[in-house]
Length: 168
Ligand code: GTP
Ligand code: MG
Image 1 (tube, rainbow, N blue to C red):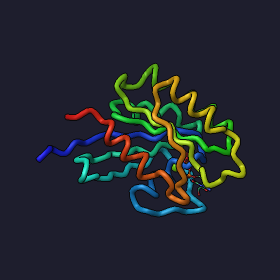
Image 2: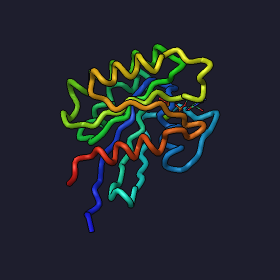
Image 3: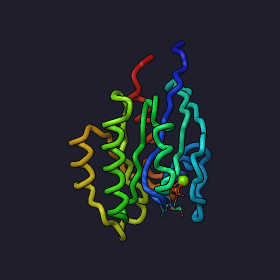
Image 4: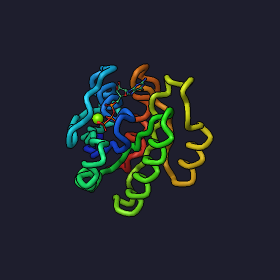
C-alpha cells in the first residue's frame, strides 16, 4: 500500500473572488450566498483516500491589509490555487500579481492552478476564456473555470492538483 502524502495547499486571490466558497464547497459540500470575508486565514484539511493525499488547506484573506501575511501561508506549499472572479477584470489583474509574487518568492516546484471562479455568472463575464488560457499557458499554470455555487469543476480542480503532486 502506498503511503499517504500530506500536501500544503494555499489559496490566494482578490477579496470576494470566492476562495473560501471554493474550499467550503470542496471540503464540506456547502455554499453560502453571504459568505463572511476571511480574517487572517482559515485552515481546513481534506483526505483523498483514492489518491493517498491529505491536503492541508490555507484559505487566505484577500483584503489588502493581510497581504504581508501571505508568505507565511505560501512558504513550503506544494501547491497554490490563484482565484479570480470571471466577472471582475480587477480580480484577474490581482491574480496575475499573485502569480508573479509566487514565481519570485514561492517554492520553485510549486504546482500552480489558476481558477476562474463564478463561472455560473456567464452573462456577466468580463474575462474571456481565451485570455485566461493564454496567460496560464505562458506561465505554466493549470487553468480551470469553477463555480463554488453550482460546484462545477470544484472536485476536478483539487483532484487534478493531487494527481500532479510529486510522488513521495
Ligand atoms: P475574502 O475572504 O474576503 O478574501 O473573499 P473570498 O475570496 O474568500 O470570497 P468568498 O468565498 O467569501 O465569496 C465572496 C462572495 O462571492 C460571497 O457572497 C459568495 O457567496 C460569492 N461567491 C463565491 N463563489 C461564487 C460562485 O462560484 N458563484 C457565485 N455566483 N457567487 C460566488
Ligand atoms: Mg475568504
